[in-house]
Image 1 (cartoon, rainbow, N blue to C red):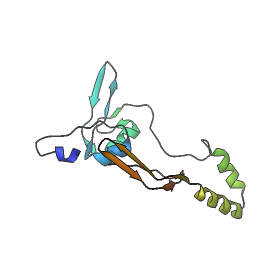
Image 2 (cartoon, rainbow, N blue to C red; image 1 turned 60 degrees about the vertical axis):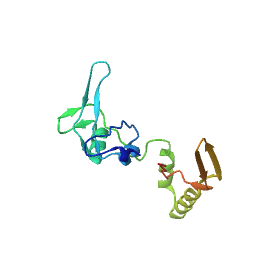
Image 3 (cartoon, rainbow, N blue to C red; image 1 turned 45 degrees about the vertical axis):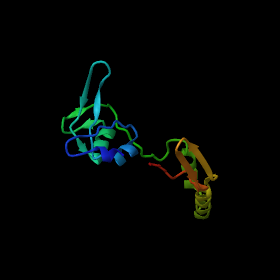
Image 4 (cartoon, one colour; image 1 turned 180 degrees about the horizontal axis):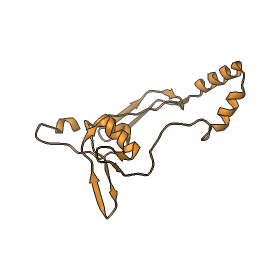
Length: 141
């Protein structure tokens, strides 16, 4: 739908806060920053990967401008968070216990039933299935 609106003599501007959707939709990314009620700045267009990385870093290298005092990071560090006790416990396990533990984790799936939903002309049919806690699932349509 969005691609069909774009032509050689116009642009489509989409404001999106979900980075996975932004990555899927965009050809270029501009970062916006400022102070509410005072000023706002829009960066020059960057490639999608570079624009997302600039946003996460909080720093625009081409303008030598830091717009956030900290970086956003999605990396899990060992010894932090809700699984910290489990990490320490794993270090104390024998190889056989570790193998059993991993096998149990792989089997820890969430299951959902088959279902159908209709809203006006829209009809959705979902087959029964499952997913594990380590999976990231994004549905676009």
